Image 1 (spheres, one colour):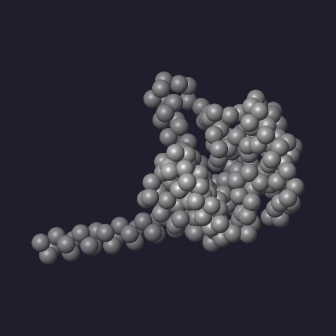
Image 2 (cartoon, helix red, strand yellow):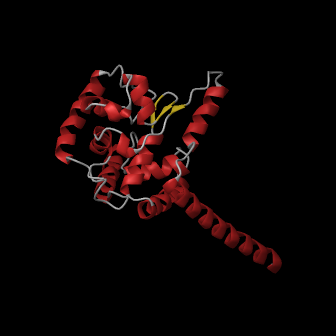
Image 3 (cartoon, helix red, strand yellow):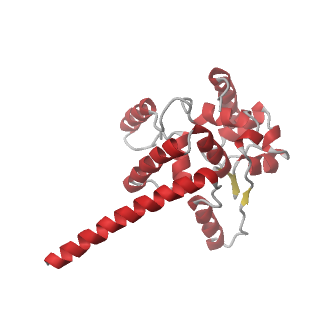
Length: 231
């Protein structure tokens, strides 16, 4: 029995050490190398295959310096007003979300994930909610905030986010929905792309509903409040 516990302890110890080193290396590598795929992309391809659909995976990397400034500004206005100020977590938004969810008694959960948290989840983790995933999300968010910095986090986020069915990143979205590069996207078009991010499989920037038009107008208004990101 003593040997069993000793071996188990050693296994857990080495597993933790290896996991820490490998995760740290992955974060360092992706500071310079662009992630070729994300777990969500793989999941979507499996889902398409399972349902007998044509596999669709549109993505094209574009550097943050090459894309329109309207795009990072629009996603900040829509998703994370304090992106440039917080260290990965917006604790006031988390508190408000907890209060809201408590009142709703679990009927409709409101999230408070920052762009940093969403980037950590998209690149390194799976989409389903769980306490394990949330814990790992906190860990990876801390790492990318320290190692990547804000500019790289925004660049990766805008290149890996799901923007439509089988469409990932703002360059692929800009070309697919507006027939132009992300470098040419206007404020209104950027706000439309940002407006559909909560549910890109349901909504489309090319054929916005009245609800999405309303979100677009609110995002445009908030873009004026935020001003220039200043990367």
